[in-house]
Length: 254
Image (cartoon, rainbow, N blue to C red; front, side, top):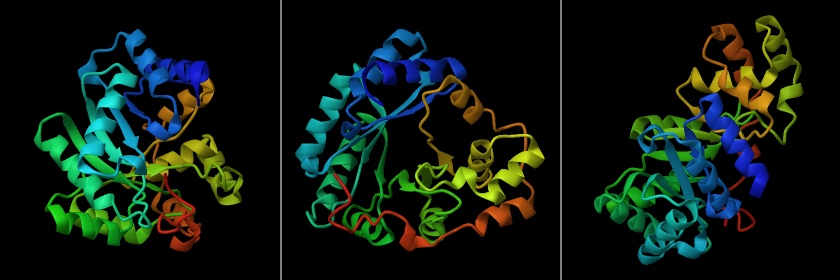
């Protein structure tokens, strides 16, 4: 979402009770997010603002510059979290990017540091190089892309898993008969069922929405629970690791 559409979405989200806002240099909307935050009148310490940087900033000094640039565009004094958006292994500079994030953390300039779309091998490399484990790995994750192996490693390492595209926006998951049937039994929407699947497993979904109705629905998932049988039915929708976007592919990442 860009410009006025993004400003309106963030403004409505904050009014609805959202407090985590996820943006990135690649989204080209940090300025719009910043304008909405400035107008919201919400104390800064009640918000969690995260942004991400591109492969052009994959160096220790590059991360410093990217962080300063994101702060300027957002109009903020600090970010709660700064994230390496993709590893881009073909460039092979993501370890230097991680070192840059570690420096920001050690300087006390950012509250948390994370990565996005990092596979277990990528995580092993940056941890071996620095001894510092990411706070978060943000990966493509939904019931039909359950990412079982990465999530198991995250749990072992103490990494929080954030789910992008958590309701399978591109896969038609909301129309799946299993999802639709569970939603009908709870008198909920398919999107609410899918988001509930995440939070019941201590995953942090970050759905994109601009429609006020969807924003309200997406956050109204804390007053019902899916049964063990329903969770198992959703788990059976998993298409396997190979169905997710491959961050080792030169075609993916920026």
